[in-house]
Image (cartoon, rainbow over all chains, first blue to last red; front, side, top):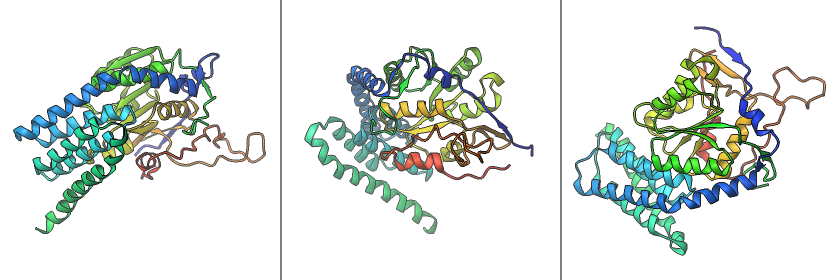
Length: 157
Length: 201
């Protein structure tokens, strides 16, 4: 085993950020939000399309949990950049569920369908409806916990 | 304060920075690019795969890499491991911010040992991403290179006495990175950053 080396580095970006000009953090944040807003409709449609694909998988029931996992990460990838916490959390729950199922070599389309439908509801919810979403999310986590319990019980069976 | 730990009146100039954005999800890549446009980054290089990003890194100077963790083929973790160990030496320590959605069980260890400067869990706001860029710019950690890990030093150091006071050691941190007061930091992020690890030294 070789000895560890400790290397001092100076990043170019460290010098760049201190140059004259630029903008304040507030201005940069506001501008970034405006840029994101301009893309929002396209992003919403992309998420809707991904949810449609998930619905298709639930209908056909002949895909793997890997495919479910990949699509749920697609939703999380986009919703996460809008800091859309309810939609991100629902996608995260489906990621967790499908990851656990595939780790156990199991398939449970009913559970996947529940998550997908919940995601669709959250995607479509606006304003005050979003306040009711907490119950839906808690239900999803109960479902994920159920898979966890099944996983723990498996060796004893 | 902006509420995210980074004072809202801090000025940053990213106009000359070249940022490489890597994500296999085309929509997410566009959104990330939009965010960086907002930050004033005009020189963006976009890539839809880690393999493609390898070629870019070999052929042009990049100031910051922002890469998604989970991608088909070569993952973001594998890319950072390659970068830190096998990339041309002059580009090896290019700062990296990794973006992670869901930490799949198979990749938890990879995430811990990847050697990225910061790992940012989705969902996040533009302000939080900007804060991480600021942290990278102010990052004074040395790079540790050993058999099992190459990346920023993850061990905690004392800030030491203030600059100019007696008793400071050569490698005491200056305290310039002392802006990490972030009440809304989620547990996953904290775990990712703070998790103690065994490193064979």
